[in-house]
Each structure stands twice: as C-alpha cells, then as structure tokens.
Amino acid sequence: MLAALLLGAAGLCVWLLLWRPAADARRLAEHVQPVEAEVAAGIDTLSVTWFGVTAVLIRHGDDALMIDPFFTRPPGYWPLVQNASIAPDEARIAQWLARAGIDRLHAVLVSHSHYDHAMDAGVVARRTGAVLAGSPSTLQIGRGAGLAAAQLRDASDGAALSLGPFFVRFIESRHAGATGGAPTGEIDAPLRPPARYLDYRQGGTYSILVEHRLGSVLHHGSAGYVAGALDAVRADTVLLGAALVGDAEAYVRAVVDPLEAREVVLTHWDDFTRPLDEPLRPMPIAVNLKPLLDALARRPALRVRTPVLAQPFAVVPARKPPSTPTTAPADRSGSR
Image (cartoon, rainbow, N blue to C red):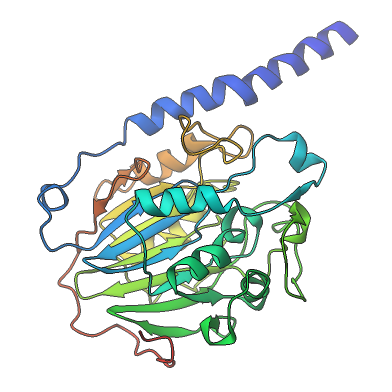
C-alpha cells in the first residue's frame, strides 16, 4: 500500500513538474504569430513588446509606457521558500532597458505590488523619468526607490490618467488563487531594498486599460476578476494572465468576452525564477494552459498569440479607433 502511494506521488510530481510544462510549451509554440509587416517595416503602429511575466512595453514612435516591469527575476525556488532578501538588479535593469531602446517613458504602471510585478518598477521609473502609477502599496515601492512625490500617482480610486498620447484607466480586479494572492495586505511604509519576498504585499489589484488613437490594450495581469467590472470596456488586444486560472470558461467569459477584442495575448505563463537571457519555460504547478486554451478556442473569432520575448507586435484595431478615449480622464496631472 505504502509503495503504491509513493509511486503515485512520484508520478504526480513528474506530471506537474515535467510532463505538463512540456505539454504547455508545445501548446505555446502553436500560437506564436509572425511579425506583422507594419512592425517590420516601421510603419506607424501601436506596438506591444513582452518581457516575461506581465511586463510589457507599449509604444508609438518615441512615446512609450511600461506595465509591471520585472527584469531582475531572482533565481531559484529555494530563496522564495526561505523568504530571503531580494533587491532590484540595477545592472540587469539597465541592460534590458538599453536592449529595448528605452531611455524615457511617460509612465510605469503596476497592476499589483507582488515582487514579480512591482519590485523593479521604482527603479525603472527613476531611470526613465516616468510617472509611477498604481496602488498606495506600489507607491511605497516607488518611495523606497527614491522617487519624488511629483512622480507618484495613486490609482486606488480607479484613476484615469492622460500620459502623452495615452489615456490610461485602472479598473478594480482581484488576484487569482485560493489564497486571494498571498501575501495580501498593504505595504504601509517606503519599501527600501533589500527586502524579503513577502514584504511585497499585494495591495490593490487592477486591470489596466491603455487607449491610443491607433488602438487599445487591456492588461489583465492576474487571473482573478470582479464580476461585471469589464462589461462596459472595449479593447482591441487583451494581455491575459495565465497563472492560477481556476474555472477557465468563467474567466474568459468575465474578462475576454465583454471586450470584443481581436486578439488575446498569453502572459504570466513563464517560470520567473529563470533569467530572461535563458530560454523561457512554462511555470510548473501554477500554470495549466490546456483548459484556458480550450476555452479560447471556443471563440473562433479570437486570435490567440504567444508573445516572443522582446519582439514587438502590432495592436490591430477590432474597430475604428476613437478620436478621443471612451472615458474622459479625470486626472491629467500625469501629462508630460
């Protein structure tokens, strides 16, 4: 009996740690899309570039903003289990900003304040002169990175911001997972690194809508949601978090269906304990792509994209882009 239990446990571990991630890697490969001709030719487009987890650069010409920048990616699971001290790797951040051709940003936006979404945000904002926008917890990370008060924007009230040619709206959401996104709670004082993994408390969690005259993008970094919160929102491209998905059909129905989007881009599927300069692999245990891809496949009008690291792709409008944002920003103090 004991031998059978041990054998079953070993088989489950192999399935979770090796077989399922390998199967997910094959599924991801099926959804890699060719580079659009507009991007390759440098034609006037709104582009998105993915840098692992939910980190993206949204750019039009010299105007750009970033969401959830995370280049440091502290290595290994054991330090995470130990709740070790971690800190932004300034050299690695500088390397990847240079590789992406980023020296100035209108804003750094943060969907929630866990380390894999927010740890590098203050440093990136400081290096690029950007506004940092997010929850009060995110702003404490910015203060710990040395940002001035003028660079901080509180998004806890569902802020709408005008940032250069971009109009941005933070929409209340929920974190995925049975724990509700541990560590939960707020960061209540400036977080000066080094700090421990669990010091990066969740704070508020948001979907982030970015609108531009050439198209619109909804960034949904965590696979929780608030029922009905997106019913009046429209977006051309959805950046959809794929970790800790519960009921995949309900998730797609609540987050993707209302948007009438043309394309869904899968994010938050990679193992972020590995550096970006090594081949990306699906995260074991926390990611199971088959149910999510099956739910998306039931919407044949949607194109599903696996983003390629640091390779821009175009936002192609599902409808004629509005000349003005769908919701007029209430706060234009972030303009640059």
